[in-house]
Structures are given as C-alpha cells and as structure tokens.
Image (spheres, one colour):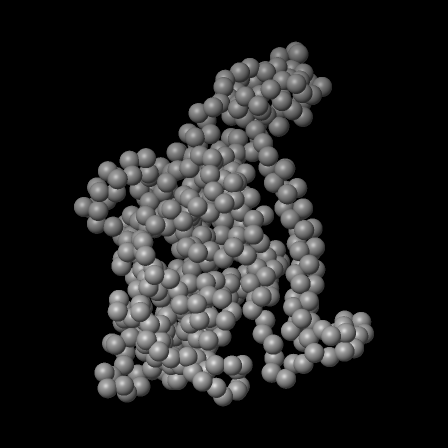
Length: 456
C-alpha cells in the first residue's frame, strides 16, 4: 500500500489483573506491528487498568473521551438505535482511578485536537458486536479487534486455493454473529427461491446466506483436505520434521537454508500461510522431509485454528518439531508458551521438540551466555550462518538415526525392485552380488526393516 493511502490508527488496550506492565506493553507493540502489516500506522496508544472490560465500550467514560480526542468523535455513546438522537451514556467510572495512558503525548492538555486524526481504532482484545458498535459511535472511527486484524492479514496473504478457502471460512465464521441490521431493513412477508421467507428480516436473511456460504466452502475444502491426507499417507514411512513457532521467528529462512528451496522469506507477520514440504539438503538416506507451517500468535482466533487444522496436521504427524524462536525478541519466553498452547490444542504436545533460538546474530555475547544457561537443551543459531545450519542438519540426521538398527538382507534376483526401495528407505552400508541375488548390509528403522523382511 502506498504511504499516502495508509490510515492512522489508535491502539486501545486494557491491562487486566494478572498481566504485568511489560506484558501489556509488549502486546500493544505487537498489535501495532499487526496494524502495520495490515496497512495502518499506530500514531497513539490509549491504555487503562481495569478489573475487566467495560461491558458497553471496553473502557470507561473518561478514557472513551480521551480516545475520541484522537479520532474526532464525540466521546459519548448515544442511547438508542444508530441514526437516532437520544441521551448519551456518561458518568464516572470507578476504574478511572487506576488509569495509565500514552494518549497525552498525542493531544494538547487544553483539549486541542491531535496533529494526526486517527480513522481506525485497533483493540487489543476480542470485543463483542455491541462493544465494537458503541466504540464506533463514540469515536466516529472504524473499530477492529485483534481477531479482525489477524483475519484481515490472513485474507491478504493467502495464496493457494486451500489457504484462501480456509481463511474465508474463518472470516465468515467470525463475522456471522456481527452482521448488523441495515437501516430501513424491515420484516417483510414474502418468499421465492433464495428470497426472504414469511416474516424473515433482512438481518436473518443475511445470516442465512453466510451460513449457506460457509457450508459450501467447507464442502469444497473437504475434497482438498482429502487430497492432502492422501499425500500425507504416502509420506507415512518417511522421516518428517515440521518447523513450528511464533510468526516472524524465521521459520521460512530456516526452511530455505535447510532445503535449498525458494520459499518466500519476508520480514513481516504471517508471511507464510501455505504448508511447504521439501527434502533436507544435502539429501540423506533415507530422505528427511521438512515442512514449514503457518506461524502462531497470541490470541490466535479460534476460527483460524479450526480452519487451518488440516494444515497444522503436518505438525501433529511429524516425528520431530523444530520450535523456532526469535531470540532477539524480548518477549520470546511468552511466545514459547503460546506455541506450546497451540500445539496442545492440535494434539501435537507429545511430539519430540528441539528448541531453536534463532537470530542469535542479533544478540550480544553476555545475553548469549545467559540463554545457554537458561535453555541448556536449545540450539543457538542464525539461519544466515552456514555453519549453524550444518550443525542443525547434523542434529536432525542424528535424531532419526538413533533408533536405526543394523541388519543384512539377501534379495533374490526375482525381487530386485526391492533394492531400489531399500536404497530409498534405508542407509546402505555395503552391497554385494552373488549367484543367488543381492546382499545388502544396511541401517534402518525397525518397522521399515520388518516390512522389507516380510516382502523378501
């Protein structure tokens, strides 16, 4: 998006009990990065400490007026349906005593308007339709909660047919309960194919259309998921590794370094939405497949987790997870916990994991030593360092060879097609030929070896 088209936004957050100042500030900073990815620039932040979100407008009346100063709104929520004049919701709020805000930096103390009017309010929470509507009426700005921002980014970055369908299902599922009655939309008696039934309002019709569209998309994606399942079955006996972790942790950079593939690498949130599977390079015997998965984020919308479940199955079906972490990000311990929670949600919590503290080239020597002490089992590396990548390559290879056993097989000449399969699925140590057939000494996993012996 060209700079002149970018919108200005205010980030709105409530610091709830149990959330530290550092965690709250980190969450708002992440929201600003999400906004930047979407194409809006956060020019101010409004925060408040409260026991819980205000049921009507997220924040209290005083803070709502402060927010409206940045957007040009009235700062009050008119009572009654939109478009009608009525009394306004005002009055003191007991939570105002514990407020903290950065908006004062953007507005004149005397109440003068800020230098830049914000046309968007980004809320660092999931808000109800009524809360969003009240915020819009009080601020005269477009209101997007955290889930809406993430869904919009996913919709923009989806490339493959499967990803676009998954995002569309998630987006419609999110917006279905938020469809509003249009002004002038009255109940009407009538019928007709696809039209409103007797007594069905325009709102009910709109929601029915959304439900029908979601059903169509799910039927379409079911066929695609079946094809993906067939591909996973074909890879069942192959060694599989999945890259998982927080968005923008460097998974795609590692994917490119480990496999030599041309996957897209970009310094932005959710650059990768499509699962890519490539062979580890230099290639090993047997082959090891690496898959790059969609990044995780705090408060990932449930609709997206549900829609991308088939994509995330790559992580559940892997034998080793490479959990990639941006070691240069001060908030990475919380990001590790977010990844753990998502993996548990998709049933991948028991898959062996290797923690990779990536982007270590951006960390000073003192901090590196502290990380080695704090995470003794982790591998510190940079995806840009060939030596670090080679070390990781060796760790992956060693992981799969730890369970291999050595054996000898004699393959009759009548079954020579098995020799090619053995070379593909085992490490062949030696190969000799005699009058009876081909004799091979090899290393293989027990289940592979049992299948080959049965075939002989």
